[in-house]
Structure formats: C-alpha cells, structure tokens
Length: 458
Image 1: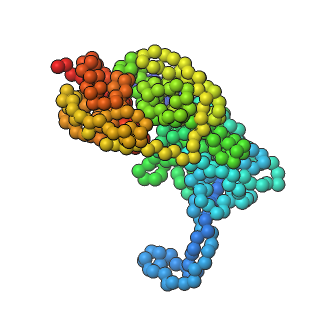
Image 2: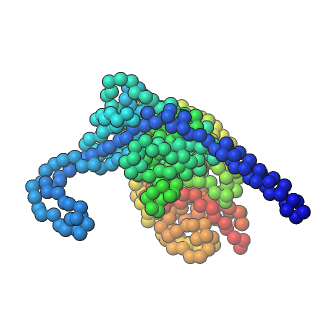
C-alpha cells in the first residue's frame, strides 16, 4: 500500500521537473540566425609599426632559459603592435574600430569574413571617444551591419559580442546589458554601455549587437583584475561612434559642442541646500569667462536639469549630450537657480583644441567654523578670475566635516560671492544654523566644487 500511494507522487514530480526543464529550454534565445546575419560584416584588424629589430633570432629555448642574444646587424621591419576587431558600416568600405587598436600604427590590415585581406587607410582617430574610422578599397560591395539605437536598450536585454579574442576570428559571446550611461576614465564624451558579455583582448573594436541584429555599440574596454573577461565589459554607444565617423568624413576632425563649465553631482545634502525636489542634474561650480555658458547667462550654482530636451540625471551625462551637438547650434537649457526653474537659450560653443585654466592659491579667522582664512591679493584674483578668501588652517569642526581643506579658496557661500574676510564673517553670522549651506571652493588649478556646510547653533 505504501508503494502504491507514493508512485503517483513520484510520477507527478518527474513530469513537473521534465516540463519545467522543457519550458526553461524553450525560453532561452536562439542566436544561430542572428550570428549568420551579422558575422559577414565583422572584420579582424591588425596594426603594426616599423621598429628596429635584430637580424638574428632567438629560439624558444633561448626564450625559456633567458639566454642573451648575440648582437647582430639591425634592420627595420613591421612588428605587430595590436590585434583587434571592427565592423563594416558602409558597402564602399568604411569600418569602425577602436582608436587604441590602430593608434600610431604604420600599417593597418583588415581581414574580412571570407578571408580576403586589405590594407586600410586610417581616416581618423579620436582620443575623446576611443573611436577610429578606417577605409578599405574592395572590388565589390561589402556586407554591412545595420545600426540600432542604444538609447532604446533595456537593462537585462540580451546582446551579443563579435570579434577575435586572442586572434580567434569570428568568435561570438552572449550576455545582457548590465547598466547604461557609465562614465569611465578619460572618455568623458562616452556614455558607456556596461554588459556581462565575455570580452577579451582582440575583441576591442568589435560590434555589440542587439537581438534585432542591429549594432548598438563598439566593445571597447574590460574592467578586470586578471585582464580577461572575468569582470565588466564596456561598449561605446553606436550613436557616439557614428557621430565621430560623420565628423571625420565632413571635417577631417571631430568638432564637439562645448559649454566652458565645471560641474559636479548633486548629492542629497546639496539637493536640500539648493531646495531641489530630486537628487539629479549637473551642478555648475565654475563658468569660464566669455564661454558659451557665460554668454548665455549661466552662473555658478545653477543646476542643469535638461539640455536640448535631454534630461541630465547625473553630472557626468552633461558632456555626453553637449559633445554630440554641432557647434553654433542654439539649444534650450532647463536649470534651477535659487530654487526656481528657468529656461535659457544657449548657443553651443566649440571645444578648443587645448584647454588651459590657470589658477593660483595663496591665509583669516572664523573660529565658529574651525578655520583660519585670509584675503587674497589682486594678482591672485586676476589669475583665478574671481574674488575669494584663502583657507590657511583648519581644525575639527563644521568646515572640516563639510570637506573644506587647507589651501582651498572660498569663492562663495549661500550663493553669494566672497571678496574679503570681513564680508565672509558677516555672511557666516547671518546664515541659518543647522541648515545645509552651499559653499563654492577652488581647489588646485581649475578645480572648483560645491560642498555642503552645516553651521551649528551657538
């Protein structure tokens, strides 16, 4: 009886497990058709540089035992400097890849999926985005990758990475979009797409492809302790890369929109200090004189909420948006100033080839805040193009808790500029206690930042 009673339960359990396994298998995506569609437009990129090399060769045993090689005659010859990937964006031979794959190369060769090899012309490379545009001359029309819209990507969406990791051509890996609009290192004009797609050396420059078969990004960087794919992968959005390519075709260089501002994130404390409803936007902490921002009337302490109709959630998104706008274009900027929303018309400037901001730091007394400060001379004011006072000493207290340091120049407090020690002390005495007060400081040449100061009760 015992066996008879348990059998139906066992059978039902097995049936349930089998059905669940089948459902799980059926829900998994099938990439085979997508790979056949995309692979023909993916290329291998090999870059080499003419360097001096010895005529004598070292054997594998010499390498293993560390034996030195006898001096011989030297000659010049091509030596591999980088291996990467790329993809064709037009049937007449334009190819996108990473700048770091072909940078400083004397010879760039491209191998397409059917094995044909071409010498490529480097049309342009852009350090600001790590994008490079190549051109090959083919006898017939080449297969092309369709481009998509990275803005429409959803976190959690499946994507594929194509390339040649460690030189293995036509390799495909899969993963999901982990996050969007990431800021990394020097590439301040790139809102990176973060994925968990397995990316290794040699994948750089290859396409990141959506389930629609459209390229949505260029696989560019790996954040990994080992240098391999066990880590985070980052791709350049295709809109950014195509903008760079169009600039190279049109001007032979990249012209970027430019404001002439420094900015920072809006923290929770700063949001309260500036009477904001949400912790979002880009807080301007320095507006360069005669810049596009200055001419439009933007000021220190303004918080940019949207630029040309695009919302700015974090300060790092501002250069993404501005950089893609053609210099000379008039746009609308939504800001918060002194707690009130305002719209300003602004003509976007052009980013100068080299930016140089010169500032000088130079010592006053405010025991209430735990700092000593002093006036700065006229030469220093001229150098920093602003009034201010210098912090010469700091002890534990409200200023230290706010993050103010010795050597900082206090430019403004509670959105009011400070031109002297006396003016500063009067301001401090009149400010409300136990409330977040925004303080604008200059820290090292060209670096301005808002901090939140809480003044205690007497």
